[in-house]
Length: 585
Image (cartoon, rainbow, N blue to C red; front, side, top):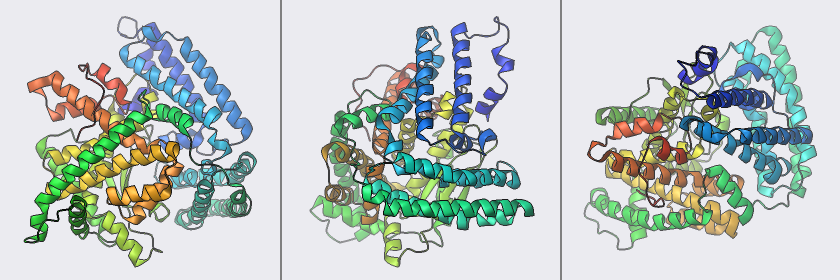
């Protein structure tokens, strides 16, 4: 991947003659500082390094002690001071972008360490399962090499759990409850999912893994008992951030100066607009789906009736993967025939989602880390967990029906996350900062934009259009409940009512979203905000290009700069100005 090559052969570029190097001294100085920072960052956070594809630190786990947290804050503060001493006005436009990405990352991390301080009240910070899973999920090295790293990380688990005991005090009950569930999941991962890999190891190594696993599982079981008997009794904290803390996290997470209240106004207005559009589409579909039956006069009843009929077209555990494979090929062909965006050549593999990850969504995109060489992208599809009742399984597949599966294929694969991430890995950028610290706002904004774009271009007919509009309701309600829960004391009953009645969601889906909103403040707002910004950028590009506007040219240009905050794109793409962003559909 080109972005990795840029890191591995800097001597061929950085130290060429001044006559052939278009960069200024300031650009070179900044690149050197960025390289030094990333080297230290990757060593400081070995678990993130593994996920990114840098495997020099696979034998380590993140330091979690109180002293380590304080040392990290000191380091990031020093980096921020050094960065601010550089003269940003002397940098090229592309280097200015990377400078700002680093500055925002440092400010966001310092906020998390010194103000939000989740390491003192959020037990989810100490989930060790992902650190082990990241070593077995991909064949990035021979199995025995990866399993030696597994042994080292298994041995480090007790220290992480001890740090959790020392650091945590009075967390919110829902966080401790979820941490207990995750801890049980990690134990199951070590006892069950890890076993097939152990069976394939060298005999001597097998014994090392088994001993390390035994000690790690014992530590996790003790930790689970502590969560249940001790911390649960002290879990009296409020999961609601409050208006002041939420506003700061919102600004840093979304990388915006838009006030949260303004986004809420946009979301609630768009909820009304989208509901009216759903009524229009449902009216056209009703005669096809119900033949001579009269159209219900009540708008909500009409929409619900049409959605319920579409939900009957549901996959099941036996055919869900085949349906996903067909949906992916259908989306590929449509994008190619309409020349909507350049398709990547990098392979994408459809896999069955691991058991311990099931039960939240039916699909996800698992792309290789930005520093991974020749990594595969997985489009993971989930049959339901084995212990689910038939009623729960039926409800799940009513929500994730065949039309939803098509929509998810767009969002997660083509032309959504898989295509966007493949383009990002080909982007030519001054530093690796864009790859290591990608913008979630851009990634989710692009994926949700592609859902509406594909429907606008005629993909899937009115049935898929209806499903995409339902997903837009979810996107809007996500932003609404995110803010109302954390700043306006929205109750669980009120949130569930909004999701199920206005969003037409199944009860299980709504219950899961309530929990997610409580646990991940500000994250649920990234979808709608990112969608607004991508739509705004397209409108401005249409004005810039006028009669020469081409969707393929626009999309390829948009994706060519990496996964960066939408705020940079008007400058880079030389777009005309526009009044304050207005949501579009």
